[in-house]
Length: 221
Image (cartoon, rainbow, N blue to C red; front, side):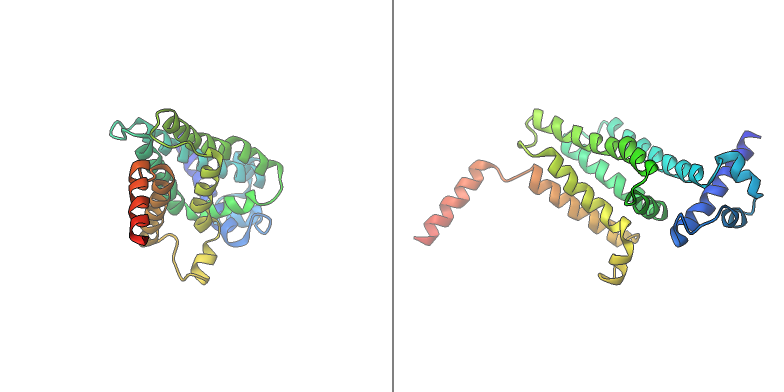
């Protein structure tokens, strides 16, 4: 019975995601969701109370799934440096967004609107993502693996680069003629972000930098 209930909830949630993505939250009715899921409309009230409760269920499941994957990153013994852990976490977020691109776009769209639910999601889940990334950067600074950096600034830039393609996929499709969920794009985005992190967190050694500067000066004489 419990398994049947969970399958019904998932079926309703998948139908809602499809409609929320194409019509928006406000433009979608509970009756449309029930029709899409091929269930009695009363089941939506029974499981989720209302449309807002269904949206909250979708958002919570999305972020809980993401955090489970990030937690697995931290448990991998082969990630023996802060940089490799951070890189793996970034890759997991990108992959997760690509795999769940409809929910990702819907969530980012809803977070852009001032609402109580949006504030709750940001306070609980977005802050947790910020904390997870910031803690790795801060540990890297303490261990002197990373230079002294503005952690919040790096995290903001990082999240901007990670979120943009999946918050605004239509811009990539219509302006850049890129499919954001395609494997080549996902690989390229991951590569670009790794390059960004290396430039910020693994700068050229100061001594090498001084030698290069000295050679440049000699060449100009």
